[in-house]
Length: 372
Image (cartoon, rainbow, N blue to C red; front, top):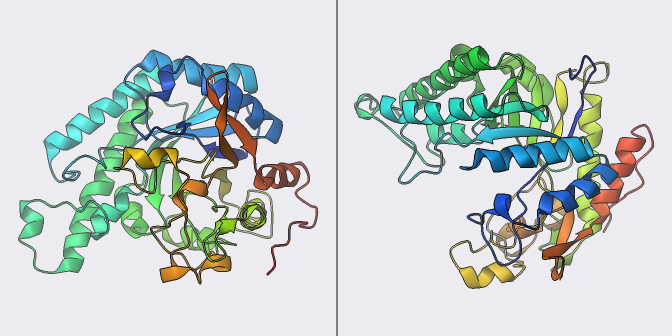
């Protein structure tokens, strides 16, 4: 509920990195203010929310972005924190000093931003649960190392991590009782432990890539950890790795289908589970640095190589090595080499218009049919 009215999140993940730069680029202080150009396009599409994965060291610049997006375009902000997930060599959730340092940063962010009218909610982590499962950025401590059973090790890590999330959530609620706190989680993995150790989170912010539909996601969550769900990262790229060409129909097909299932599962729709708060698409604009992030020469090249495979995106799964997920091609808008007032020109893709049309008329039958 926002201003005593139901609010369905219609969002995009936002990281406006220009061609030739990587994730370290400080777009917040860019005098060209890319968010003012993007905000107008978003408003015209019907976007009402952006997701920022992390705050910025200059909190006044963060406030400016949040204020501009809200005051000029009516767009609210979901803002999160990585919780040290990408620190080298790994996040040490089993270390109290590490936890306290991360907590201090999060609570400072909440304290500084909680009174901004454009803030919608807080998100803790992204896919940090994978570190408990030995998938990404695995961590341990002396007690866990003494346990010979790998399954019990995972349980011990999950208890530590989700208990930390719960403690952090309660501290945020004390500072800011007006904005919900979301648990950022990759898929539904580990949520049986969240049910035990993180009962105070308000909702699950789920990162999920399942292709055309979300399958049994909404009902499964009800059975596992009965909280509302925000699809905080989902989407489809627009490069057909099998045919070796840009395919905007493919991307639009997947996104429209995904949004139909979101609408089927929102509160009040008796067809579905009634626990969905909306979705945030990955992503607003292409990021040209992603495929070969350690090679600055590649940041000015729109790479067509893929690093991973997902059979749920079935149109191009027959690509070489089944690698069909193209990290640099997920944007609803593509970036042009040509610039306008210092910014790469934004070119909306077909998915921009298809999703806009769906939001305006969700009862209409799908028009975008992707066929071979």
